Image (cartoon, rainbow, N blue to C red; front, top):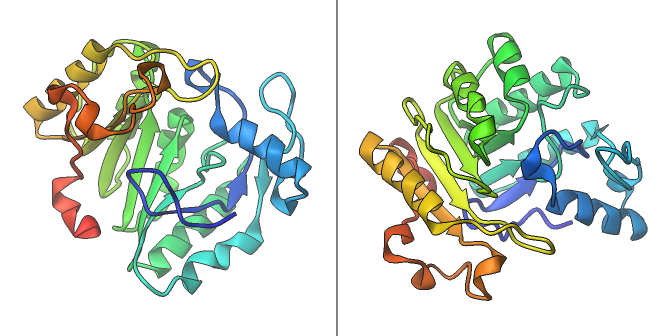
Length: 254
């Protein structure tokens, strides 16, 4: 797989681990699980371990790839990197020592900006004090519905330079959302087969909470239920035509 990314809020991906297990409703239509099955069939060596069929699938068993740790050192120009687009670095079966090695790579390559996203917010909080946090690391948690708001409280306790939320797929209202000490919020509907519709008012509420608190909102997409132009920002309702980045770190996108 190419390390270049088509994800609107990043430039490249790096997967020192692959595979995962469903942990909440936001995982129900996981794009990575579907892609892993395809990559396994194609013979991709990183996707040959099968996961538990109850929570994972073919080619999607959690696998650690020490050989992938060298990859960022070879990138000549600075880039913004989404870490583990095909996994979760804070999965329970990723050894703490390996998480530390990934963090060390980030520290060794300060020219790059790294974005780490997890649904395992509790483990993130529990081991955060045992990690050295480089200033070029942005740490985020997924918050797809009100049931997962506790993840935000866990994130607030993490000493990352930038803390962010991914409210994608947004599958319910986030009435109790508090973005205090959060720098950035990605908002998006679900895409692909079986996509669940995002109510525009849910997204508008998140944007409003961000703007009131000085947190940067980034509306990625409306979701495929809203038609073929769901990624075209010019087609969004006016209140959702906003794609900002963390103000303290705008250099990463200059």
